[in-house]
Length: 302
Ligand code: PXL
Image (cartoon, rainbow, N blue to C red; front, side, top):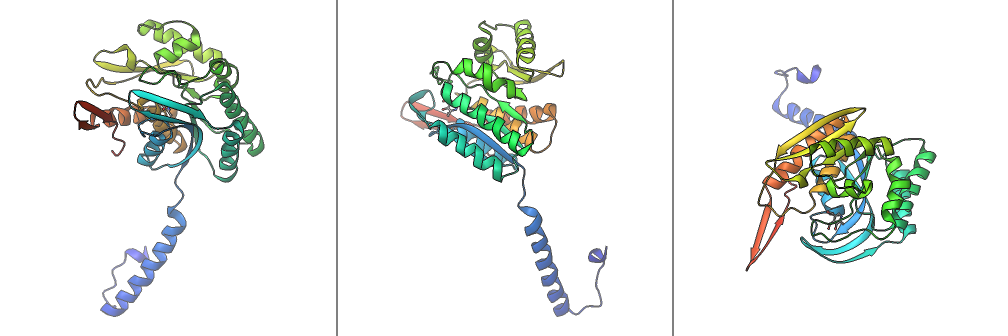
């Protein structure tokens, strides 16, 4: 109240000194309050071309005003459309990164992306369970079951899908498969809306988690995703953006949802904001041309 009062009786110099003191007090206060953004953790692989994986997750977290942490599971040498080589981190290293981060930061939400091998899927599940037991805090967990790159390259080692089914998916708050990944988890093919609804329900029951089944791959004028959450089916739809060679949309989408959950939004709100963000990042994509080759990239700075 006093701060809003005009001070006509003060001389300019006292007013200046007063303002300086006030500014100083305000900036001290700001310094105390300012640097505590929500925190989210991405457990994922490094994509050196920075369109997917850890790099896409960090850009997305930042765009949402969330401080991003990363536990790197593997290093992928790649450019959009071509995976050249993948090397996993050791399980000990993956576990240790998760341990130190959860013990020292107040992590508001976690997402997993590319986990590379059966051993790393198990190590991640174990590390999350151990830390949660120790801190007695259940953190929302978004599992993006990354299995195949947009290029068609297989990104998971043998046995990893089984490990997902038995160890990691039962810990998830939300699972975000695309149609191919849901098909692999259910050993079936999903080709239309009815099959999408059915697959979402079966996965939700199997893993006692909410399911966001991404139908982007069905193609058409709309990119339609279905959320099955607390026994209710909700549709999220956006115009399908044609003509962009997308890479990292799944990572960006799940990271954006995770940012929303870390910030305290409900699941539906977090998905709505995330869907809008991914669509915008595709619409406003970057494109580099060199000779006859073109590289497209999502624009996360929106
Ligand atoms: O878009 C899937 C994906 C996720 N994570 C990493 C990747 C890729 C695709 O290539 O490299 C690290």
